[in-house]
Structure formats: C-alpha cells, structure tokens
Length: 122
Length: 122
DNA sequence: CTAATATCAGGTGTACTGAAATGC
DNA sequence: CGCATTTCAGTAGACCTGATATTA
Image (cartoon, rainbow over all chains, first blue to last red; front, side, top):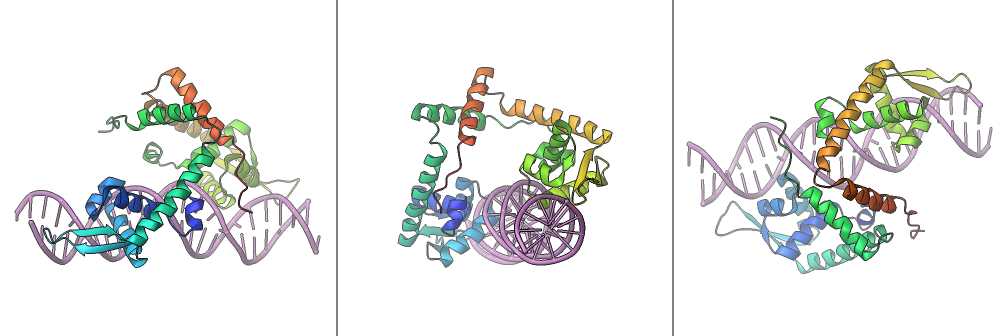
C-alpha cells in the first residue's frame, strides 16, 4: 500500500491494470465483476487511467451502452512496474516463512475465503 | 465489522473497551499505544464512549496534561456483549478449519506480524 | 527550552448506496 | 416494458498529517 503510493498509484489502479492485461479488454461492468471493485469506483479509476494514458475508452459498436476499456502499451509497462513492486513487497512480507509454509498459509486462507457466506440474518 | 455496526459499534469502540477492561484505566496517549489507534481517533472515540456512559474522563492529578480514562460498569457490560459477538463471528469465519488447522494459521500469521519492519527506505 | 499530552481541522483510499440517463 | 450499463453525488469507517495549547 505504502509502496504503491510511493509511485503514485492506488490499489484500484493495480487491480484494474492487472485485470486488463491478464484477461484483456472488457466493458466497465465486466471489469467490476472481475476485480470486485464497485462500478462507481471503476468509472473514476478508468478516468484516471485514461487521463494518464494507461488505457483507452471506446464505445462498443455491438452494444452502445458499453465502454470498451483497452490497455495501452504504456499501461502494460505501468502494470509490469507495479506488479514487480507488489511481488517484491509480498516476498518481504513472507520472508519469515518457508516455501512450504507459504503454501499451507495460502491453502488455509483459501478455505476460509471459499466458505459460502452466512445467511443467518434474515 | 457488519456485526458490530448492527449493534451500533465500531472497531475503535471495541478495541478501546478491550484495552480498558483488560489493561485497566490509562491516559489517552497510553491507550493509543496499547491499541495502535491514532491519538486523534482516540480522542473522538473516547468522546463517544463517555457520551454513552461507557467510560469516564478525569484529569490526572499527578500530571495535569493527562486525561485518565476509566471504564464504567456499563462499559464493562458493553464490552462483554461486543466480545461475545466478535468471538461468535470469528468462530463462523474459521468454521472451515479444524482446531489444529487454526493453530497453524495463527502461528504462521504471528510469524509474519512479528517480523521486524523493513528499513530499506532511508 | 524540550518533550509529552490532548485536541482540532483536514485529507486520503477503500467501499458502498441511490438515482439518473442511455441503450439493449 | 424490464434489464444492463455508465455516470454522478454522496455517505461511511479506518487511517493518517499537520497545527495548536497546555503542562511537565
């Protein structure tokens, strides 16, 4: 987090750029679903990415409601830079754990996250 | 988090009440250090606790800079209620893990947290 | 004078809600 | 018509940065 702000980026930027370069161009609603970022926040973040030249916004010809968001070459370079930073931070954070311990940790956390949400409140 | 808001409490309330009932009365600066909550936010949260009758604020006679914060009987009852809620939520969250798995998880996370912070930035 | 304390005013990133306009 | 998409305006809690006044 602090590392991202040092290069003037936020979590939303990184997550959107990651979705764009890993999964390809998509409409904003699709990006929202892929990243878990709220639609409203996708709008603001894409505004920012476009403004910095990291992405392009074009109307989808086959469905003119949609804005197709495409990553630019600059955006891809930006993502590579951010991703390297994030990986480096993760490595530092997990340096107290061995490789097999990290696997155990990920497995346990995944089990928690993949738990069906509780529906007791009704 | 959502559970706390259902009873009109926030994380800061819970953490301060916990520190007060577990460690006893203290000055606001001490509470800040014990809970990791910023001094500014301690002020606002104590305001709220006092307003609801969960805590008392009195000037420390031996050092008049200090405000001694004391938990009231109401505050202790409040904490018991919140603590029960939190424990229940934790249990739900971790229900996918066995008791020994939970121990492993806690051990791994503790190792990460007890890591000396990185001082690469100079 | 230096240091600690309490307080206030404000800013930021994350997350969400509600409503409007447009197009399928 | 219902439905999806985009956009804007606003709210909320967590977290943090100063600056100020008081007292040790």
